[in-house]
Amino acid sequence: MKFIFLGDVVGEPGRKAVIDTVPVFKKEQGIDFVIVNGENAAAGRGITPKITIDLLRAGISVITTGDHIWDQKEIIPYIDTEPRLLRPINYPDKTPGQGSIVLETAKGKIGVINVQGRTFMQPILENPFRVMDEAVSRMLVETQVIFVDCHAETTSEKIAMGRFLDGKVSAIIGTHTHTQTADEQIFPGGTAFLCDAGMCGPSQSILGRDIEPIVARFITNLPVNFPVAKGPVKIHGALIEIDEATGRALSIKRVAQDYVPPPASAPASPAPQTAEV
Image (cartoon, rainbow, N blue to C red):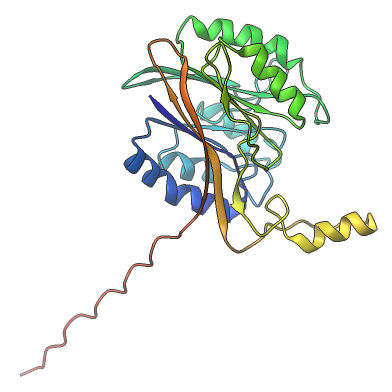
């Protein structure tokens, strides 16, 4: 079973790149299941119902999120209607939406869990280790194939979560920092791990945003707007192979490639003119 997970989608440039590229990944690499973190998909902050629908129609199976999940207010009434859009599982009870899902596929059931760390993160949610211990135990009753998006700031917390879940889940990939790490590995218990998947967004940027305003903020400490950058886009993530019978990871490979827009369609030829008789 082949998974592909794509890191934080940043704004319209990231959305377009992912929507264009996912069908190509599935066709050329035989991908069975696609997961994308979409929490920055709406102008760099949050996600909307329309964007959710567009991403799912492109062939994405599950969309994970993180601390920006509520930034677009229309997502609050919508999230209960679309179980494939996850918010972190360690929100308090009665929070809209769900933090996990199990989907039936041609190769068996696949579980996905979205969890948020607490170190240097806002809001501070329930203890992710305790919540994940219970959530994984419940999910293992249904399937051995479990993917986790750990949305957290510090490498130490994400690595600790990976070690904590080693042998219990198939893969745990970190998100949030928008910077891909080079520590892909399979832990002794059979869990694939990558500290951060990186982002799908403009490469000539600071974390997907225009360079100048962010540099100015560091120099002056004055508040400024951080618009999404333009220009070339890079797609980051991880390609993971899993033994569906045991749930153990067989391989993990980082994805880091330039987005090449598809050629524009040629304009339709004008209808031939006929002379009147």
